[in-house]
Image (cartoon, rainbow, N blue to C red; front, side, top):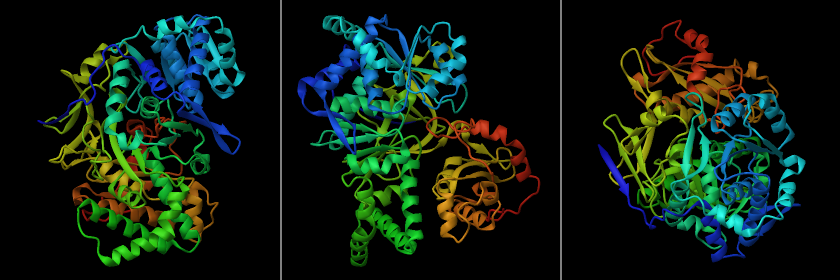
Length: 608
């Protein structure tokens, strides 16, 4: 069993809770801009002192209407400034937030609220209210529903005007490190969502230790970030709390279609994103260059960027010819992409799925160091992460301070430490199954290098075993295929089958641009595009490229392009855009069987 433990770099404080992070920040730098909110075409700063004042005022409102310490309050909203305001107000009132994804269906809302025992909920929009109303009759414990669109947050502040400051101070100090801070439900990719009990110590100790480990990212003058990933997910939730602790100015943009303009005006120093965002940035730039007749230049620039970064990482000399090309491409290509991201981004933290070395090296040469990390809801987000001073592209980095990571004989990743959750809510059987002593069983498969850098190779439950007995990790094939601009999603299949196949969906956002760049009608319907010879040839090229990295027995021999999208609404993706593999395999069983209706030869060429 291979094991790496990173000792904490900050002494533990078992009595501290999340509210202390804000109190300490106000004491250290009351006038520092902790947030910025949209204001016309620009942004208006909110200082640590003013944020604290707004938090206390809203906390008083919760107290005034009868919220008691330990009460569960659900929150259904997009990623905005109000999200973190409500979060900290509930901490100060002594309550426990139960976040609900803004895209959740009525059935999902009903399950989370009923299982958690939530007695109140805050919803942002009329659409959220309508979805809640569909299941309101099935939620007998639900006493209060507050709507942000109806001005209820302001009304709560008014109602709390008579509550004394001392009562809020008393409430916020009730919880110690071992008490529940929040109840976050897993995204449900492998079944019904389970409530993860995350404690105050999980957030406090992880924030304090991560603040030291990532000091070059968060503890520098003018540090700022623009959050656009849903704060209902543990990844962005942790970052938002870490930013309060570290004094990073945070802005929000819930509409990803407005992301580039927001980046241009906000000008963050670091980003938090999932790999799909980096793929979109790259693919959009490539297709834009193609449309302008500069596709060849872009691809040459991308190849030079990757080669340049690889040589730097390996400590090798950069040949003069590459130096000259790199300098030229920096003016023609790289500088424009940097400017599109605001011009000040130095670091980007990536998680949720593997990024892939190509994109890591490409952005590194742009001057953006992508610090890929790994974690789950059960580990309060990060367990490992690449550091500014200790980074290897293609890995998810070493263990964070205060965290231990080990691999079992089967290669399963197990985690223990300051970040590991307490239990699954009201589910002792699932809790017992999730732990091996004090080690959390992640279900993911990985490998360490000699320096303790972890690489994720697949999910234990997703390993495909072919009829010939070959073990295949789907992610190794799926991730490079998904990087193709016209590919939306891909699911590799072949369990107990004679060969590996793939189900493919097209990306409706990128497809029209690609079609136009290739002399085809940009408005070609998805059903027609799925059958078009040029589209199938492009998908084939993506599959061939992925096959080049695996053995013949692991290669994809057949594929089908489905004339539909997989979305969260269709039930095939989680809120963080991960595929629900079991659901897809079940829903498209006929299409899978059709792939195996006729045999193929055993060459490494995938057949349409």
